[in-house]
Image (cartoon, rainbow, N blue to C red; front, side, top):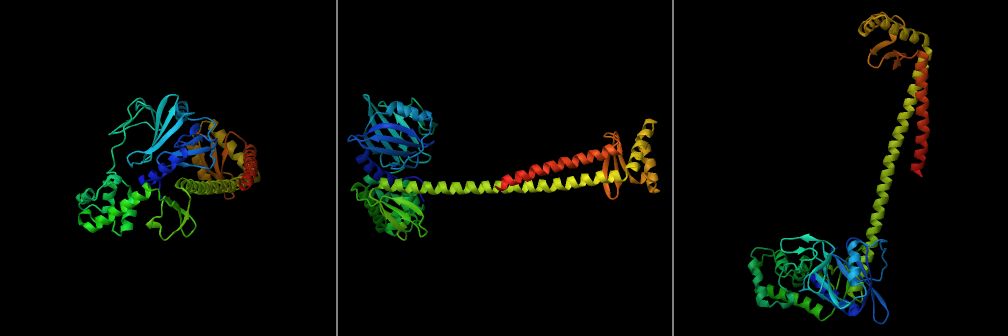
Length: 433
Protein backbone atom coordinates (compact mmCIF):
# COMPACT_ATOMS: atom_id res chain seq x y z
CA UNK A 1 0.00 0.00 0.00
CA UNK A 2 1.40 3.36 -1.06
CA UNK A 3 1.42 6.40 1.16
CA UNK A 4 0.45 9.60 -0.64
CA UNK A 5 0.02 10.37 -4.32
CA UNK A 6 2.39 10.67 -7.28
CA UNK A 7 2.64 13.35 -9.95
CA UNK A 8 0.65 11.12 -12.32
CA UNK A 9 -2.08 10.59 -9.73
CA UNK A 10 -2.27 14.30 -8.97
CA UNK A 11 -2.51 15.19 -12.66
CA UNK A 12 -5.62 13.00 -12.98
CA UNK A 13 -7.15 14.22 -9.71
CA UNK A 14 -6.72 17.88 -10.68
CA UNK A 15 -8.30 17.34 -14.10
CA UNK A 16 -11.32 15.67 -12.50
CA UNK A 17 -11.61 18.21 -9.70
CA UNK A 18 -11.56 21.08 -12.16
CA UNK A 19 -14.88 19.92 -13.58
CA UNK A 20 -16.32 19.38 -10.09
CA UNK A 21 -15.27 22.43 -8.08
CA UNK A 22 -14.62 25.23 -10.59
CA UNK A 23 -17.14 28.00 -9.92
CA UNK A 24 -18.25 26.62 -6.53
CA UNK A 25 -18.48 28.79 -3.43
CA UNK A 26 -16.61 27.87 -0.23
CA UNK A 27 -19.42 27.65 2.28
CA UNK A 28 -17.49 26.37 5.33
CA UNK A 29 -14.01 25.19 6.22
CA UNK A 30 -13.26 22.58 8.89
CA UNK A 31 -9.96 21.21 10.14
CA UNK A 32 -10.61 17.56 11.02
CA UNK A 33 -7.19 16.91 12.48
CA UNK A 34 -3.65 18.27 12.26
CA UNK A 35 -3.36 17.57 8.53
CA UNK A 36 -6.89 17.20 7.13
CA UNK A 37 -9.10 20.04 5.88
CA UNK A 38 -12.70 19.64 4.76
CA UNK A 39 -14.13 22.35 2.50
CA UNK A 40 -17.92 22.50 2.18
CA UNK A 41 -18.60 23.77 -1.34
CA UNK A 42 -21.86 25.07 -2.79
CA UNK A 43 -22.43 24.42 -6.48
CA UNK A 44 -24.20 27.23 -8.44
CA UNK A 45 -27.23 25.03 -9.09
CA UNK A 46 -27.67 24.53 -5.36
CA UNK A 47 -26.01 21.18 -4.71
CA UNK A 48 -23.13 20.83 -2.25
CA UNK A 49 -19.78 19.05 -2.33
CA UNK A 50 -17.13 18.20 0.24
CA UNK A 51 -13.49 18.63 -0.76
CA UNK A 52 -11.08 16.73 1.45
CA UNK A 53 -7.44 17.83 1.58
CA UNK A 54 -4.80 15.91 3.51
CA UNK A 55 -1.35 17.51 3.46
CA UNK A 56 1.28 15.17 2.04
CA UNK A 57 -1.25 12.49 1.11
CA UNK A 58 -4.44 13.18 -0.86
CA UNK A 59 -7.06 15.55 -2.25
CA UNK A 60 -10.48 14.46 -3.54
CA UNK A 61 -14.22 14.90 -3.27
CA UNK A 62 -15.67 12.86 -0.41
CA UNK A 63 -19.19 11.62 0.26
CA UNK A 64 -18.39 10.57 3.81
CA UNK A 65 -19.08 12.46 7.03
CA UNK A 66 -16.28 13.39 9.41
CA UNK A 67 -16.40 14.27 13.07
CA UNK A 68 -15.58 17.94 13.35
CA UNK A 69 -13.81 19.50 16.35
CA UNK A 70 -15.93 21.80 18.50
CA UNK A 71 -13.22 24.45 18.55
CA UNK A 72 -11.48 25.14 15.22
CA UNK A 73 -7.67 25.43 15.32
CA UNK A 74 -5.93 28.74 14.55
CA UNK A 75 -5.04 27.65 11.01
CA UNK A 76 -8.65 26.80 10.26
CA UNK A 77 -9.85 30.14 11.66
CA UNK A 78 -7.40 31.99 9.40
CA UNK A 79 -8.59 30.09 6.31
CA UNK A 80 -12.19 30.90 7.19
CA UNK A 81 -11.31 34.57 7.50
CA UNK A 82 -9.83 34.78 4.00
CA UNK A 83 -11.61 32.08 2.00
CA UNK A 84 -15.15 31.48 3.27
CA UNK A 85 -17.76 32.71 0.75
CA UNK A 86 -15.01 32.89 -1.84
CA UNK A 87 -15.42 31.46 -5.35
CA UNK A 88 -13.04 28.75 -6.59
CA UNK A 89 -11.89 29.99 -9.98
CA UNK A 90 -9.44 27.24 -10.80
CA UNK A 91 -7.43 24.27 -9.57
CA UNK A 92 -4.13 23.32 -11.18
CA UNK A 93 -1.04 21.19 -10.75
CA UNK A 94 2.26 23.06 -10.64
CA UNK A 95 4.75 21.85 -13.28
CA UNK A 96 3.85 18.15 -12.94
CA UNK A 97 5.14 18.35 -9.36
CA UNK A 98 3.28 17.01 -6.32
CA UNK A 99 1.81 20.46 -5.73
CA UNK A 100 -1.79 21.55 -6.31
CA UNK A 101 -3.08 25.12 -6.26
CA UNK A 102 -6.65 26.28 -5.70
CA UNK A 103 -7.32 29.84 -6.84
CA UNK A 104 -10.03 31.61 -4.84
CA UNK A 105 -11.60 35.03 -5.43
CA UNK A 106 -13.27 36.75 -2.49
CA UNK A 107 -14.33 40.36 -2.10
CA UNK A 108 -12.15 41.65 -4.93
CA UNK A 109 -9.11 39.79 -3.58
CA UNK A 110 -7.40 36.75 -5.09
CA UNK A 111 -5.86 33.99 -2.98
CA UNK A 112 -4.00 30.76 -3.69
CA UNK A 113 -4.34 27.74 -1.45
CA UNK A 114 -1.19 25.73 -2.20
CA UNK A 115 -1.17 22.07 -1.17
CA UNK A 116 2.15 20.20 -1.10
CA UNK A 117 2.03 16.41 -1.25
CA UNK A 118 5.73 15.57 -0.92
CA UNK A 119 7.44 14.56 2.35
CA UNK A 120 5.25 15.55 5.34
CA UNK A 121 3.22 17.91 3.18
CA UNK A 122 1.96 21.42 3.82
CA UNK A 123 -0.97 23.72 3.10
CA UNK A 124 -0.09 27.36 2.45
CA UNK A 125 -2.35 30.37 1.88
CA UNK A 126 -0.84 33.05 -0.37
CA UNK A 127 -2.28 36.47 -1.28
CA UNK A 128 -2.37 38.20 -4.68
CA UNK A 129 1.10 39.67 -4.04
CA UNK A 130 2.56 36.20 -3.43
CA UNK A 131 2.96 36.84 0.30
CA UNK A 132 2.38 33.95 2.70
CA UNK A 133 -0.65 34.70 4.88
CA UNK A 134 -0.88 31.41 6.73
CA UNK A 135 0.65 27.94 6.65
CA UNK A 136 -0.17 24.65 8.27
CA UNK A 137 3.54 24.24 9.06
CA UNK A 138 6.11 27.02 9.22
CA UNK A 139 9.72 26.11 8.56
CA UNK A 140 13.12 27.42 7.49
CA UNK A 141 14.87 25.42 4.80
CA UNK A 142 18.09 25.62 2.83
CA UNK A 143 16.38 26.55 -0.45
CA UNK A 144 13.29 28.41 0.82
CA UNK A 145 11.35 29.50 3.89
CA UNK A 146 7.68 29.02 4.71
CA UNK A 147 7.13 31.99 7.02
CA UNK A 148 4.25 34.42 7.39
CA UNK A 149 4.80 37.64 5.45
CA UNK A 150 7.58 36.26 3.24
CA UNK A 151 7.31 35.66 -0.53
CA UNK A 152 6.22 32.15 -1.39
CA UNK A 153 8.81 30.14 -3.31
CA UNK A 154 8.27 26.78 -4.94
CA UNK A 155 10.68 23.99 -4.00
CA UNK A 156 13.49 23.24 -6.48
CA UNK A 157 12.32 21.15 -9.43
CA UNK A 158 12.84 17.45 -8.71
CA UNK A 159 13.55 16.58 -12.34
CA UNK A 160 12.56 17.27 -15.92
CA UNK A 161 8.88 17.55 -16.76
CA UNK A 162 8.10 14.26 -18.58
CA UNK A 163 5.40 16.03 -20.61
CA UNK A 164 8.03 18.21 -22.31
CA UNK A 165 10.69 15.55 -22.76
CA UNK A 166 12.09 14.52 -26.14
CA UNK A 167 13.68 11.16 -26.90
CA UNK A 168 17.01 12.89 -27.56
CA UNK A 169 16.92 14.49 -24.11
CA UNK A 170 15.91 11.21 -22.52
CA UNK A 171 19.09 9.55 -23.85
CA UNK A 172 20.99 11.73 -21.34
CA UNK A 173 19.84 9.34 -18.60
CA UNK A 174 22.90 7.30 -19.56
CA UNK A 175 24.96 10.04 -17.89
CA UNK A 176 23.91 8.52 -14.56
CA UNK A 177 26.48 5.80 -15.30
CA UNK A 178 26.33 2.78 -12.98
CA UNK A 179 23.23 3.99 -11.14
CA UNK A 180 20.26 1.60 -11.44
CA UNK A 181 17.78 2.83 -14.04
CA UNK A 182 14.88 2.84 -11.53
CA UNK A 183 16.75 5.27 -9.27
CA UNK A 184 17.89 7.36 -12.22
CA UNK A 185 14.30 7.75 -13.46
CA UNK A 186 13.21 9.16 -10.10
CA UNK A 187 16.03 11.72 -10.25
CA UNK A 188 15.90 12.50 -13.96
CA UNK A 189 12.12 12.89 -14.20
CA UNK A 190 11.01 13.11 -10.58
CA UNK A 191 8.16 10.65 -11.20
CA UNK A 192 8.70 8.77 -7.95
CA UNK A 193 9.86 5.22 -7.37
CA UNK A 194 6.40 3.67 -7.68
CA UNK A 195 5.72 4.82 -11.25
CA UNK A 196 9.39 4.45 -12.22
CA UNK A 197 9.05 0.73 -11.43
CA UNK A 198 5.72 0.54 -13.28
CA UNK A 199 7.23 2.13 -16.42
CA UNK A 200 10.12 -0.35 -16.43
CA UNK A 201 7.82 -3.28 -15.69
CA UNK A 202 5.61 -2.37 -18.66
CA UNK A 203 8.68 -2.19 -20.89
CA UNK A 204 10.22 -5.40 -19.59
CA UNK A 205 13.42 -3.60 -18.59
CA UNK A 206 15.32 -4.76 -15.50
CA UNK A 207 14.97 -1.99 -12.93
CA UNK A 208 18.44 -2.71 -11.52
CA UNK A 209 20.22 -2.36 -14.88
CA UNK A 210 22.93 0.34 -14.89
CA UNK A 211 22.03 3.39 -16.98
CA UNK A 212 25.28 3.27 -18.97
CA UNK A 213 24.44 -0.20 -20.28
CA UNK A 214 20.95 0.66 -21.56
CA UNK A 215 20.59 0.08 -25.31
CA UNK A 216 18.90 2.53 -27.70
CA UNK A 217 16.04 0.06 -28.03
CA UNK A 218 15.55 -0.17 -24.25
CA UNK A 219 15.64 3.61 -23.92
CA UNK A 220 13.04 3.90 -26.68
CA UNK A 221 10.81 1.35 -24.91
CA UNK A 222 11.09 3.23 -21.59
CA UNK A 223 10.43 6.56 -23.31
CA UNK A 224 7.36 5.16 -25.12
CA UNK A 225 5.91 3.87 -21.84
CA UNK A 226 6.41 7.26 -20.19
CA UNK A 227 4.70 8.91 -23.19
CA UNK A 228 1.84 6.40 -22.99
CA UNK A 229 1.21 7.25 -19.33
CA UNK A 230 1.27 10.96 -20.13
CA UNK A 231 -1.18 10.37 -23.00
CA UNK A 232 -3.52 8.46 -20.71
CA UNK A 233 -3.56 11.44 -18.35
CA UNK A 234 -3.90 14.19 -20.97
CA UNK A 235 -6.49 12.37 -23.10
CA UNK A 236 -8.44 11.61 -19.90
CA UNK A 237 -8.56 7.91 -20.79
CA UNK A 238 -8.73 6.83 -17.19
CA UNK A 239 -9.87 3.55 -15.81
CA UNK A 240 -9.70 4.10 -12.04
CA UNK A 241 -9.16 0.92 -10.04
CA UNK A 242 -8.95 -0.28 -6.47
CA UNK A 243 -6.70 -3.33 -6.28
CA UNK A 244 -7.59 -6.22 -3.98
CA UNK A 245 -5.43 -9.13 -2.83
CA UNK A 246 -6.42 -12.79 -2.48
CA UNK A 247 -7.64 -12.16 1.09
CA UNK A 248 -10.01 -9.43 -0.02
CA UNK A 249 -7.76 -6.72 1.45
CA UNK A 250 -7.40 -3.40 -0.40
CA UNK A 251 -3.78 -2.92 -1.44
CA UNK A 252 -3.78 0.18 -3.64
CA UNK A 253 -5.68 2.63 -5.83
CA UNK A 254 -4.68 4.10 -9.21
CA UNK A 255 -6.21 6.08 -12.10
CA UNK A 256 -5.55 3.19 -14.52
CA UNK A 257 -4.69 -0.53 -14.40
CA UNK A 258 -1.10 -1.24 -13.33
CA UNK A 259 1.18 -4.02 -14.53
CA UNK A 260 2.50 -4.63 -11.02
CA UNK A 261 -1.01 -5.63 -9.88
CA UNK A 262 -1.85 -7.78 -12.91
CA UNK A 263 -2.23 -10.89 -10.75
CA UNK A 264 -4.66 -9.23 -8.33
CA UNK A 265 -8.35 -8.52 -8.58
CA UNK A 266 -9.45 -4.96 -9.23
CA UNK A 267 -12.59 -2.98 -8.66
CA UNK A 268 -13.31 -0.41 -11.38
CA UNK A 269 -14.71 2.92 -10.17
CA UNK A 270 -16.33 5.63 -12.29
CA UNK A 271 -13.86 8.38 -11.28
CA UNK A 272 -10.45 8.55 -9.64
CA UNK A 273 -11.86 10.94 -7.02
CA UNK A 274 -14.48 8.39 -6.04
CA UNK A 275 -11.90 5.59 -6.11
CA UNK A 276 -9.68 7.54 -3.69
CA UNK A 277 -12.67 8.32 -1.49
CA UNK A 278 -13.71 4.66 -1.28
CA UNK A 279 -10.17 3.39 -0.85
CA UNK A 280 -9.28 5.74 1.99
CA UNK A 281 -12.67 5.33 3.65
CA UNK A 282 -12.22 1.55 3.81
CA UNK A 283 -8.56 1.80 4.82
CA UNK A 284 -9.49 4.27 7.58
CA UNK A 285 -12.21 1.94 8.89
CA UNK A 286 -9.74 -0.95 8.85
CA UNK A 287 -7.09 1.09 10.67
CA UNK A 288 -9.63 2.19 13.27
CA UNK A 289 -10.72 -1.43 13.76
CA UNK A 290 -7.07 -2.49 14.13
CA UNK A 291 -6.46 0.39 16.53
CA UNK A 292 -9.55 -0.58 18.55
CA UNK A 293 -8.37 -4.20 18.60
CA UNK A 294 -4.91 -3.14 19.77
CA UNK A 295 -6.47 -0.87 22.40
CA UNK A 296 -8.61 -3.77 23.65
CA UNK A 297 -5.55 -6.04 23.69
CA UNK A 298 -3.58 -3.44 25.65
CA UNK A 299 -6.47 -3.05 28.10
CA UNK A 300 -6.80 -6.83 28.54
CA UNK A 301 -3.03 -7.10 29.05
CA UNK A 302 -3.20 -4.25 31.57
CA UNK A 303 -6.06 -5.93 33.45
CA UNK A 304 -4.14 -9.22 33.47
CA UNK A 305 -1.14 -7.47 35.00
CA UNK A 306 -3.39 -5.79 37.59
CA UNK A 307 -5.06 -9.14 38.37
CA UNK A 308 -1.70 -10.88 38.76
CA UNK A 309 -0.52 -8.11 41.07
CA UNK A 310 -3.74 -8.27 43.09
CA UNK A 311 -3.56 -12.06 43.38
CA UNK A 312 0.07 -11.82 44.47
CA UNK A 313 -0.88 -9.21 47.09
CA UNK A 314 -3.75 -11.42 48.25
CA UNK A 315 -1.42 -14.38 48.68
CA UNK A 316 1.13 -12.27 50.57
CA UNK A 317 -1.53 -10.77 52.86
CA UNK A 318 -3.00 -14.20 53.64
CA UNK A 319 0.48 -15.41 54.53
CA UNK A 320 1.13 -12.33 56.71
CA UNK A 321 -2.21 -12.65 58.49
CA UNK A 322 -1.49 -16.28 59.30
CA UNK A 323 2.06 -15.51 60.49
CA UNK A 324 0.87 -12.66 62.74
CA UNK A 325 -1.90 -14.85 64.17
CA UNK A 326 0.55 -17.68 64.88
CA UNK A 327 2.98 -15.27 66.57
CA UNK A 328 0.16 -13.92 68.75
CA UNK A 329 -0.81 -17.48 69.71
CA UNK A 330 2.82 -18.38 70.44
CA UNK A 331 3.23 -15.37 72.72
CA UNK A 332 0.10 -16.33 74.66
CA UNK A 333 1.33 -19.93 74.94
CA UNK A 334 4.55 -18.67 76.58
CA UNK A 335 3.16 -15.50 78.10
CA UNK A 336 4.78 -15.89 81.54
CA UNK A 337 8.25 -16.78 80.22
CA UNK A 338 8.32 -13.98 77.64
CA UNK A 339 7.00 -11.42 80.08
CA UNK A 340 9.69 -12.48 82.56
CA UNK A 341 12.37 -12.11 79.86
CA UNK A 342 11.20 -8.59 78.87
CA UNK A 343 11.02 -7.41 82.48
CA UNK A 344 14.43 -8.86 83.33
CA UNK A 345 16.14 -7.15 80.38
CA UNK A 346 14.58 -3.76 81.16
CA UNK A 347 15.36 -4.10 84.89
CA UNK A 348 19.03 -4.93 84.25
CA UNK A 349 19.29 -2.00 81.84
CA UNK A 350 17.88 0.35 84.49
CA UNK A 351 20.47 -1.01 86.89
CA UNK A 352 23.16 0.28 84.55
CA UNK A 353 24.27 -2.77 82.64
CA UNK A 354 25.30 -2.39 78.97
CA UNK A 355 23.23 -3.98 76.25
CA UNK A 356 26.22 -6.12 75.28
CA UNK A 357 26.55 -7.41 78.85
CA UNK A 358 22.86 -8.26 79.02
CA UNK A 359 23.02 -10.04 75.65
CA UNK A 360 26.18 -11.91 76.65
CA UNK A 361 24.63 -13.22 79.86
CA UNK A 362 21.46 -14.34 78.09
CA UNK A 363 23.40 -16.13 75.36
CA UNK A 364 25.45 -18.07 77.98
CA UNK A 365 22.21 -19.09 79.71
CA UNK A 366 20.75 -20.03 76.32
CA UNK A 367 23.68 -22.38 75.74
CA UNK A 368 22.76 -24.05 79.03
CA UNK A 369 19.09 -24.27 77.89
CA UNK A 370 17.90 -22.15 80.83
CA UNK A 371 14.29 -20.94 80.48
CA UNK A 372 13.36 -18.29 79.32
CA UNK A 373 16.90 -17.32 78.17
CA UNK A 374 16.78 -20.20 75.68
CA UNK A 375 14.30 -18.13 73.59
CA UNK A 376 16.71 -15.19 73.29
CA UNK A 377 18.20 -14.29 69.86
CA UNK A 378 19.29 -10.62 69.97
CA UNK A 379 18.54 -7.08 71.11
CA UNK A 380 18.40 -3.97 68.92
CA UNK A 381 19.32 -1.08 71.26
CA UNK A 382 18.22 1.59 68.75
CA UNK A 383 14.69 0.30 68.31
CA UNK A 384 14.39 -1.43 71.68
CA UNK A 385 13.25 -4.58 69.94
CA UNK A 386 13.95 -8.03 71.37
CA UNK A 387 14.19 -10.88 68.87
CA UNK A 388 13.19 -14.30 70.15
CA UNK A 389 12.75 -17.77 68.66
CA UNK A 390 9.90 -19.81 70.16
CA UNK A 391 8.51 -23.12 68.85
CA UNK A 392 10.21 -22.58 65.47
CA UNK A 393 8.88 -19.02 65.06
CA UNK A 394 11.35 -16.11 65.12
CA UNK A 395 9.78 -12.72 65.83
CA UNK A 396 10.33 -9.36 67.53
CA UNK A 397 8.99 -8.15 70.87
CA UNK A 398 8.79 -4.49 71.81
CA UNK A 399 10.72 -4.05 75.08
CA UNK A 400 8.54 -1.05 75.96
CA UNK A 401 5.46 -3.29 76.01
CA UNK A 402 4.44 -6.32 78.03
CA UNK A 403 4.22 -9.75 76.42
CA UNK A 404 0.42 -9.50 76.45
CA UNK A 405 0.57 -6.10 74.72
CA UNK A 406 2.95 -7.53 72.13
CA UNK A 407 0.53 -10.41 71.46
CA UNK A 408 -2.33 -7.91 71.10
CA UNK A 409 -0.23 -5.94 68.58
CA UNK A 410 0.33 -9.04 66.45
CA UNK A 411 -3.37 -9.86 66.55
CA UNK A 412 -4.09 -6.28 65.47
CA UNK A 413 -1.73 -6.70 62.50
CA UNK A 414 -3.41 -9.98 61.59
CA UNK A 415 -6.84 -8.28 61.62
CA UNK A 416 -5.53 -5.38 59.51
CA UNK A 417 -4.16 -7.85 56.94
CA UNK A 418 -7.54 -9.65 56.88
CA UNK A 419 -9.35 -6.35 56.28
CA UNK A 420 -7.02 -5.66 53.37
CA UNK A 421 -7.71 -9.16 52.04
CA UNK A 422 -11.41 -8.35 51.84
CA UNK A 423 -10.61 -5.13 49.99
CA UNK A 424 -8.38 -6.93 47.49
CA UNK A 425 -11.02 -9.62 46.94
CA UNK A 426 -13.53 -6.90 46.02
CA UNK A 427 -10.93 -5.28 43.74
CA UNK A 428 -10.32 -8.63 42.02
CA UNK A 429 -14.06 -9.03 41.46
CA UNK A 430 -14.15 -5.58 39.81
CA UNK A 431 -11.14 -6.39 37.67
CA UNK A 432 -12.72 -9.63 36.45
CA UNK A 433 -16.03 -8.04 35.49
